[in-house]
Length: 203
Image 1: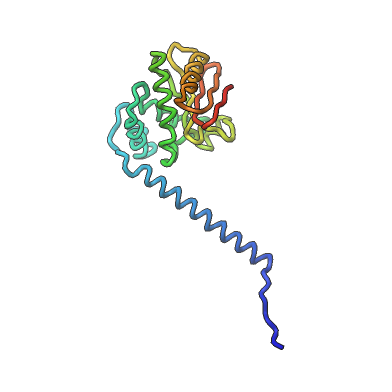
Image 2: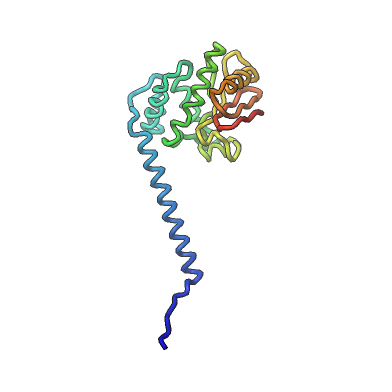
């Protein structure tokens, strides 16, 4: 009677296989994000944009102009590319913020259109867009929430000239009730937060 050899899978083999599959998954994810980034920025112009300093381009490269041209293409009336890009050059201590990854660029459009409409409704200019995208390291440096919507490029902290944060929040709620966006509205002492998280939230 012949003996049959059956290979027993050792714990080491099992772990090695899991590690290998983990590497493959990580590689595929990285490759996908790389492709999405390339696609996102491939067709955006690198032409100069009014208000964008050359020093910003020198610091962070041609994606500054690509992102600025994308914002310009939204044809907003009350929000300029400089306003949108400015917060990405802020620092906290030794930590610098960054531009959002290219695949996140289009995520900001809905909330910028909301801000544009708010300015038109109030007939008041935007004073400052204080915070838009935050890189994870910069978000930690400013003590943002660990799951902050700023890290998804779908949130803006803003001020309008001559308008209190409470009034700004009220206008945002009115636009939300009209179905123009679905998201969170936060009222702070010196600014108003609005995001497009996809569900209603107020604080």
